[in-house]
Image (cartoon, rainbow, N blue to C red):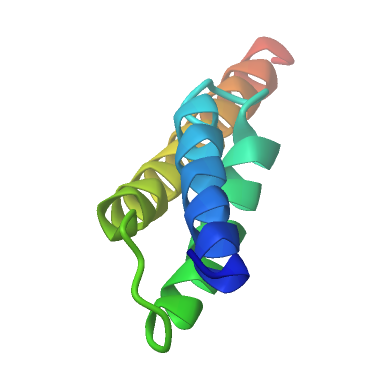
Length: 87
């Protein structure tokens, strides 16, 4: 296996793991963002090099987006609740 294919496989799995950790509200937001960026880079590299873990990359992108949106929603709800408690 070439070094590029191995590197792509490792990054694909790293993005997948970071995306799962990114589903934790607020604390997982940096992981979700990192997983999103790594998955984006893997998708670009997949155009030239075949990737055995392409399903994991697609799943990582979806989970990262959901994790980021979920964290933003939780932060928004916390901010809304904090502003209502001020009155």
